[in-house]
View 1 (cartoon, rainbow, N blue to C red):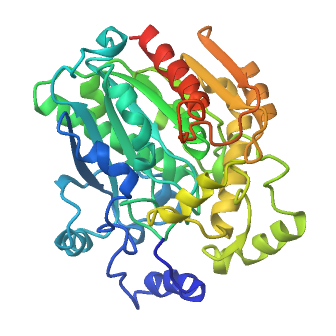
View 2 (tube, rainbow, N blue to C red; view 1 turned 180 degrees about the vertical axis):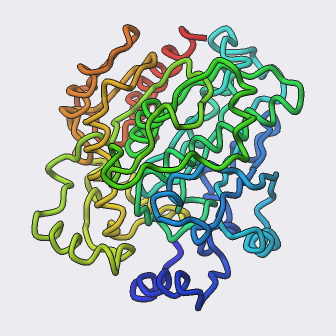
Length: 426
């Protein structure tokens, strides 16, 4: 992990806001960080093709309010990238705020033929990562879906991976849903521009990525016409309602009818979603009060332990996380923790608006997010095509890579469940 002085991380945003300082690398060293060695087999696989893109959003200082800046989906530029040093400087010249994502596909039918009958061909699977992670942490599992024909799309959420922002600092979870929307919009634009028929899309996510998928489904109205999505890409978002007249975040979030439309989602597979914090990981009320008191002046300050040490009973999981320089292994930042609490409350309030085919899976030994919260959310989902399974004995990391076939059996069970559910809806 790239390490910085916490005091500087607190002071720097204020200097930027006052126009006294420009961040030279808005990814804080993450842009050119070499791949984590366990990810190289897929990156270098001759049967697999991949590319990285970044999407530029208007800089924060161009908005009248913070919430408008967090919630924007206006794309001002997008391009393929190679993750080289020169792209940092060119990115700063374009405003210094971008979202990065990658796409992965089989170049041709894999050796041994398509798995699952190849029913995933022509279908998109979008995978959204969790707190402290970044998109390519899914690398050990991606081939399982590529071999069934899926094109896999993996965003780096804001402040993670190659996307911009102080590492793991999220002053609002609206940053997550707007990120997912611009990535899907950019995919639609590229497909239409290349004459490709728009794919059937499945959304998948774990932990905070699960929250992102669920809130995205309720926030943006769907359309069956891809051209409608593409046509809105460069348009500013509708104005927010005046304080007190709206609902949701700070009582200003625009109505669903005023949001941009999203592409139709064929289904969502969500693992251990962040809909309720486990009692093992929620900071004490004293720490929360301290955080709220400091949030307006020191939102980026690392303060709480949170899920550290609570994601798996296998020490190798934490060791691999610590060894990956693109993971955030520091304390939970004040702003991120408070934004997560607020986001979970909003999701609970609007759960009936999540209307899409969905399967939720969770472990009953999860010490980071609560499977009981997932059960309660499930009961309120309106779509008839909904399923849930609580995996006995599973902790928060449900896809732990085993050291041998026996140790890997639990991961294989979840992967088989996941792929089977998607293929049934292809």
